[in-house]
Image (cartoon, rainbow, N blue to C red; front, side, top):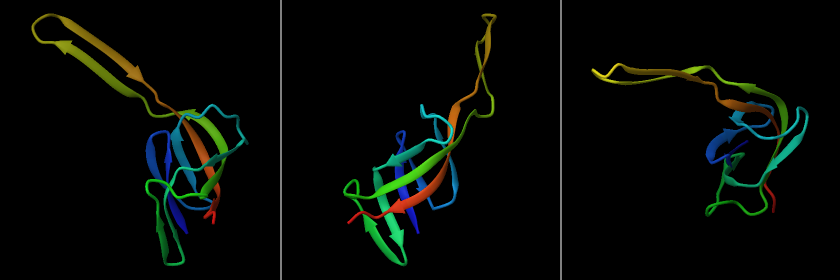
Length: 105
């Protein structure tokens, strides 16, 4: 069983008891989160696709941890002008443990 869910403007394929890193969510460690923007659901060879979302379908997850991703270096310069800037960025993320996929109806 798996589902495709929209979380934070991105689409993820989720399965029960799997970990998933998503965009930062303002939740505490151990909190339960429900996502109702389910685009696609597959269970035992049966498929359901939403237009755009499935009515009544939900994915339940638990927050495992909050963290920062790998550092990305951003280097800007202008040729022959002596202008150089180096900056770093670490994207925040939330790690979720998918508990349950509920088909609804």
